[in-house]
Image (cartoon, rainbow, N blue to C red; front, side, top):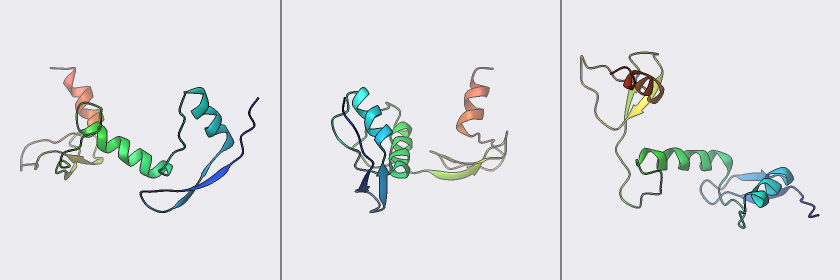
Length: 104
């Protein structure tokens, strides 16, 4: 049985030191991951969110997509959309858009 110990790792993205816990190491091993994380949890989440916007779920090596701030017309939550919102046209956050999508 392998005994894991907490490790401090410096994020390659933001330079912040984060803790790679023993339980996270065990989970990585169970999933077959052989490399330690290079990014802190915040940067990993941001990177996942960025790659999910690309559409294919994979990593896009092209230029990043221009995003525009907006307020959801349904729930009022602040969000970002890949088009410039126009006056008089409703804009929805991802969750509300998915809910409304099934109604049409």
